Picture 1 (tube, rainbow, N blue to C red):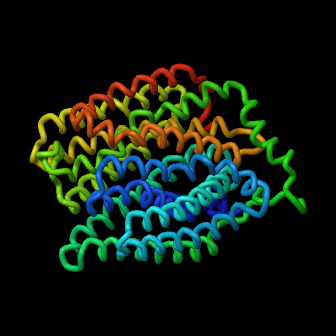
Picture 2 (cartoon, rainbow, N blue to C red; picture 1 turned 120 degrees about the horizontal axis):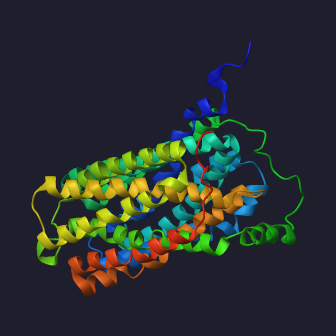
Picture 3 (cartoon, helix red, strand yellow; picture 1 turned 180 degrees about the vertical axis):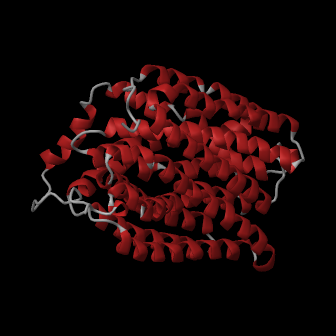
Length: 425
C-alpha cells in the first residue's frame, strides 16, 4: 500500500503554513500598522508618525546582511522557533514601555527590537517554505500564506485596536495599549510551543557543516544574486511596484482618525479598527486568495497587468473620500473594501515574482534579498509622506499618490516572466 495522501508535503502543509504566516504577519502589523494607530491615538503628529515608523522598515531592508547565516548555519526550523520566542519578548517590551513618561522614545526602542526579531523570523520562515514544499505546492499555497499573513492584520489592526478603543475609556489609553501588547506576547509564547510540535523536518533543511563562517563564501551568496540575468530590471520592479502604496499606507489610518476640520474623516478608534482593520483586511485577504489561486491556474504572465491595474485603480477612491468627506460609514467602508481588495489581488504578483528572482542554489538568502529591496521600496517613499500630506492637505496628497503610480507601471513593463511559471502542471 502507498503512503497515505495526508502525509504528503502539500497536504500536511495545512498544519503549519497558516499559523507560520500568521506569526510572520503579526509582528510586522504591530510595528507598521498598530504603532501608527497607537501614536495617532496618543497625540503624535502625522509627520513624526510617517518618518519614524518608516525608519522601522530598516531591519527588513538590511536583513540580507545576516540571511546567509540563516541559510547556511543551523536549520530554518530552529531559527523559526528561536525568533518566535524573541518576538514575544519584544512585544512584552512594548507593553512595558507604553506607560512610561518618555513613551515615544521607549516604545520606538522596543519596536526596533521587535522589528529585528521579526525580520530574522521572516528569513527563516520564507526559506523553510521553499524547502518544505515542491514548486507547485509553493504556488498553490501563496494565497493561503498571504491570507493568514493578512489575517494577522485583522487580529491586530482590527480586533486588538477595536478592543483598545472600547477599553480605553475605562482604564485609560496607555493602559489599554499595554494590555493589547501583552496579549500578543502571550500568543507568541503559545505559537512557538505549537510550532515545535508540528513543523516538519524536511531533509533539505540542513545546516552547512562548517566550523566557521568564510568571508569569501558569505560574499559569494550576495555576488550570485547580483549576477542573475535581468537583475537590474528585477530590482527596479521590486523597488517601484509599491511606490505609491508605500505613501498611501502611512496616511490611511491618520486620514480616518483626523477630525474633519483637519481634512480627515473623524472616525473613532473602534470605528477605524472595524472598517479598516477588519472589513478592509477581509477584502485584502479575499483579493490575496483570489490572486494566488488565479496565478496557480493561469500563470503569472497572463495576470501581471490585470494585477497591477487592480492594485492602483481603486486608490482614486481616497481622492473622492478626501474631497467629499462623507459621514456614511457604509460609503467609507465600501471605498476601503475596494482599495484593499485590489491591493491584495495585485500584491500576489509581487510575491510570486520574488520567488522567480530567488530561484537557484541560495534560495533562502536570495529571497531575503528580494524582501529587503521590498522593504526599501516601502521605507524610502514612506518617510516624507507625512510632510507631503501636511503641505498638500489630504485631497492633494491622494492626488499625488495617484500620480506616483506611474513608475510602478513602467517597472512592470520591463520585466520578463515565463508564461508557464506558477501554473500547476
